[in-house]
Length: 526
Image (cartoon, one colour):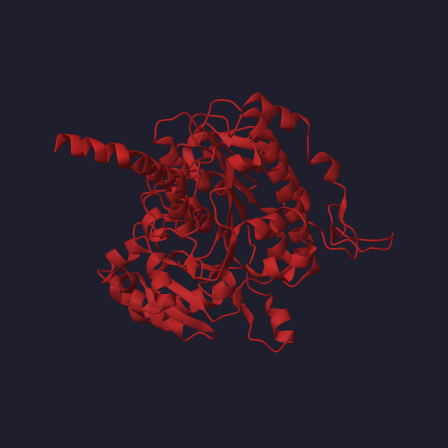
């Protein structure tokens, strides 16, 4: 019997080894983790800008659309679609109800002051005269950068933008640095939260005064031909020509962002550490331009084309410094924007302008009539006002009853779609539709106002230009694109939420999802 078994083994062993070899060869190797993640946000960039201006793109956006995983139906699912929330959501995957970032700024009841999403009196500004700096301390959740850092391997995370919140919130608590622009000096600045002094390479950038050549320029169309082209605006006041306002409201602001991103790649040796490095870049100038002129103005097309070229330049530099197969890119926008109301009216669409003061006056009058005189509001932003809790307490009133009276008055005003009280949101007494869910996800009790007031679609608070901040599609629908050797390219029409970005990155990088993420893993891994 023993001789028989030995014979069988000798007979079949070569075949078994051959089969095992074939199985091993057929098994796909696990995808190599990237050495660098480049997270790009274009501030105020609606999804339709990808399609509307696609024929004009030939660099970064064109490359991402050709080689990346492009999601055509990506939306934010929180109610207050503004810069701070979009940037905090990007790499945390957390809605305001978890992150605590409920707006760009809010009234802080404990101090009786308005604070910003990143203001931090415990820090000092570096790189320009000033008192307090900024930090991510008001962000209550982790980001992808934090999760990478907590793996323990040496890595670097750096955030860059014109706006402090746009540099700080995506890069997270454990970032090595965040850099933004001081608009008074046009210097790159940071805060003592990250370091005690700016690094030499940032100080050198400030010494070079990148802004100076543009301070007397006019912004001409990118594809202007001949000497008769009309500029969009001028940095110097000129009769009959729109004033650009400041450098950040021109394409030159974005150029400064891209230049510093290249310097960061080179000087911080990004993509060459044992762990995974992260560079977050937010192009802010698109937002300043969009607010001033609206999505239908030729200046928006022009800055979109220029942003395509800048992203192409940055990716080409990353190819050179890190290697095209060694980094992963993800791109999105922090919000969309509404058409200018007057433009909509001219094309027989709904739209108009509302006044904060009118809404607040109506609520105040109702409260005075019902409960007597007093300063009923301590902060009066029309979409999220804060009632005077000390006055309510001194009169022995029920806060919920006061809220209801104010809400009833606001609902009677023209073009107000919905009004929710703080107590209604906290107890879940909202419609269970997309807007009701968005309001719930936008609510974080310790920081939220006492009312949430939503206007009709296409109606804005503001006398000029346009804005964003609603749960309507023109504000929530943004691009989401992943690109890298680990990613299956193609066009994906499956509906997703922007919160899916962080969860998907965590899966691709092999790290824990951020602590507040509500997203799912998108099926794009090779």
